[in-house]
Amino acid sequence: MKWTFLTSGMMLAFAAFSSFSISDACSKLLAGQLDPFEVAFSGGAFGFLIIPFIRRPDESYMDIFSPQRPLMWGVRAMATFAATAASVEAFMLLPMPEALSLMFLMPLFVTILSVTLLREKVSAWSWLSVILGFMGVLIVLRPGMRALQFGHLCALVAAIASAVGVIAYRLAGDDTPRLSLFGSSLFGPLVGDGVLMLAHAHWPHGVRTWVFLFGYGFLAALGQLLMMMATARAPANRVALPQYSQMIWAVAFSYFLFHQPLDGWTFVGIVVVTLSGMLGWLHQRIHYERLALEARRAARRHPIQYSPRAG
Image (cartoon, helix red, strand yellow):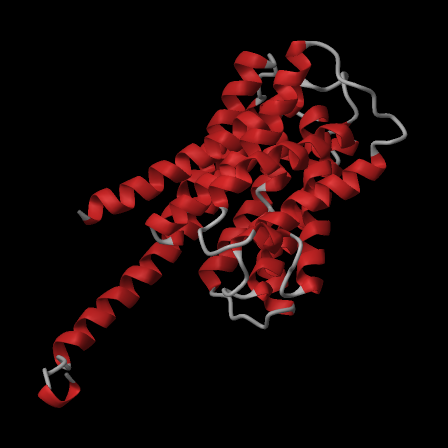
C-alpha cells in the first residue's frame, strides 16, 4: 500500500516534469516567429484553463484576486514574470541542455537566500551539493574558453528569479489558498510580459504556431497542477528526484528535434550538475528516513497507554 502511495506520487512528478519539458520545447520551436515576451504572455493566458481543476470546493475564484499577504503575492508575481520571460529567451537562444544546466543553479540561490533572508541552517551536505552543481555549470560554460551569449545571462536570471519565487512561497505560509498562489504565477506573466510585448507583438499566423503557443502555456500550467497532486500523494523529498528527468528530455529534444548535439565537455558538465542535484536529494532522503526511524524508536520506548478518562 505504501509503495503504491509513493509510486503514484513519483509517477505524477515524472508526468509534471515531462509536461514542463515539452512546454519548453514548444517555446523553442517558436524562436524567430514570435517575440519571447509574447510567448511568455501566452503562458499566463492559457494557464487559466487549469484553474477549475485546482480550485477546491471550499475555495472561491475570488481568491485569485485577494491575496492574504499582498507583498509576497507581488514578489511571486514579479519573480514568475522574470523567470518565464528569461527562460523563454534562454531556450530560444541556447541548446536546451545548456540552458537547463544554468537553470539548475536555482538550488544554489535558494540556499543562499535561505541563509541570508530566512536565517535557516544549511548542512554541509547541502553546501557540497550546490558547490558541485556550480562546478558542473562552469564545465558547461567554460568561461574564457568560449564566448558567452545573452542566452546564458537569461538562463541565469531565470534561475535567480525562480529561487526568489521559492522563498516567497515559504514566506507566504501554509494557510495561503492554492488559488492565490497559482494566481500570482499567472498574473505576473500576463501583466509584465503583456506590457513588454506591446512594442513587437503581432497576431500569430498558422495552426502550427497556435499549437506551439497553446502547448507552451497549457503544458506549463498542467505541470504545476500535476506537481500539486504529486506532493499531496508523496513526501516532497520523493517527488524532487524526477526533476532531473528534465535533462534527459532536454538532451533528447536537442539531438533529435533541434539537431544540436552536445560536445564532450558540455555532456560532462551536465552529468556533474545532475549528480549534484541527486546528491542533495539523497541526503534529504537519508535525513527524513533517520527522523522517521527515531520517531518509531521513541514510540516503542514510550507507548501511548489507553486511558478511559481520555475517552
